[in-house]
Amino acid sequence: MFGLKTTSFTTLIVGVFIAYVLHTCWVMYGIVYTKPCANPKNKNCIKPYLAVNPRIQLSIYASTKSSVTDGANLNLMLKMENFDVNSKFERIVNVSVPKRTRSNGTLYTHLFLHHVGMLPWHDSNHVYAIGHLTTYMIPKPEEINLITGETEAQQEADGRAETKVADQPVAHWRSKLTINIMADNFTFDGSALPADVHRYLKLMQHGRTMQYLPILFVDELSNRVRDLRIINATSIMLPLTISYDAISLGKLRFWTHMQEAVYSLQRFGFTEKDVDEVKGIFVDTNLYFLALTFFVAAFHLLFDFLAFKNDISFWRRKKSMVGMSTKAVLWRCFSTIVVFLFLLDEQTSLLVLIPAGIGAVIEVWKVKKAFKMTVKWYGLRPVFQFGTFDESEKKTEEYDTQAMKFLSYILYPLCFGGAVYSLLNIKYKSWYSWLINSLVNGVYAFGFLFMLPQLFVNYKLKSVAHLPWKAFMYKAFNTFIDDVFAFIITMPTSHRLACFRDDVVFLVYLYQRWLYPVDKSRINEFGESYDEKDTVKKLHKE
Image (cartoon, rainbow, N blue to C red; front, side, top):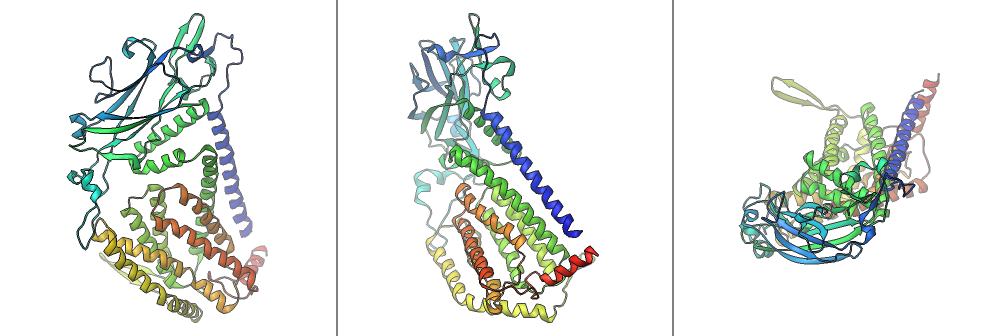
């Protein structure tokens, strides 16, 4: 009965997951596909104004004002007469930065699509869009050589050394401006107009026909953190790359939804750097790879939940540490905390930081269970009490100690040498940053080491003793999924290499499972054997 309940719950979760994936696919189909007007002669049909091939002009201005009614306070950056919406282009212009913007102010860009020979504000049928040329972000702290005190030469060349407000958001220049126009010859059905398109439409009456003016769209997703540049008092002229390309209706609708999702993250408190990771997923990949990323992320979420469920369930009912190393549990706790502090120091995306923090809390809880630790309070003073271990548990410790003894002879000197080399040759923000980086490099190296004792125990006993393959396989699948995310989400190189490191250990586990015979009577690293499980199942059936 117990096994039936567990299977039913897992089946329910998988069923919910499948329903979620199918629902998401249906929603995405509704976004990228828009039903056209069935009968073009119907009075509810809205036809494109571009179909009559009007002579239009693209004018792009810069201003410190967020709204304009005439040409006052506008600085013309680019003007393209007889603009062809189907012709892709890229221009680099030098923009004069006003004093107000150099004093930590904001600079906007105002874009107009209007008829040739007319000023935009004099053309009643012009199309207007607004974008930001600046954004606010806390600048990255300056890195120095902790021995010589030498700073980055580029910091001084860019004038960044004058910026002292490292703990407050300062104005950054967006060096790229990407704009799009929906160029599809598409006829909308006025009675079934999508809400996400309606707000971008500007309608005009042409005889008996209703027409919509070109849809002008400013692509905010293309603005990446790597393209930002700090604005200071010396930033009088700054380069701006203006890129244009036509966009299909399906991609426009998809892009508007994604852009709105990014705005929502910012309203919830995500910083420019955090949402930049999300932008990278959409901007730096094509649509086919993006679809693959969605399915990969969905499966990652499923396996994460199932692995988490099995892991927590196992540790909650665990009474004995037979077959498991307390040193390994303690090391995993220490290494997880160090990795979390390292990611925090590197200002890594919250997409990576939050799961690492949750993992650190869980590992602390496991240490408490592994050492049979209880905490008693005498007033404000906590007293920690530890349980005792039996002979079987001490036997496992002996194998682990033997494995660690051999491997540490190589890895200890390598980690110490790496810490000294990085101190002499690599620049850091502070001594704390060097310490955390040195520790995390050791963690990634010794993390590999502390995954090996179980392999060594299996080798000594010539048996895998039925390791908990169910929970293990969930984590193994997630390891391979992490390999995909290692190329998509920005993260430190050492953290990325650690994802591939786990693959090797998993393959060795599979090899040992094939190589060694199965001994169902032996206690595995989780304190269980198949004989005991069969006995429990029979008792439940009776």
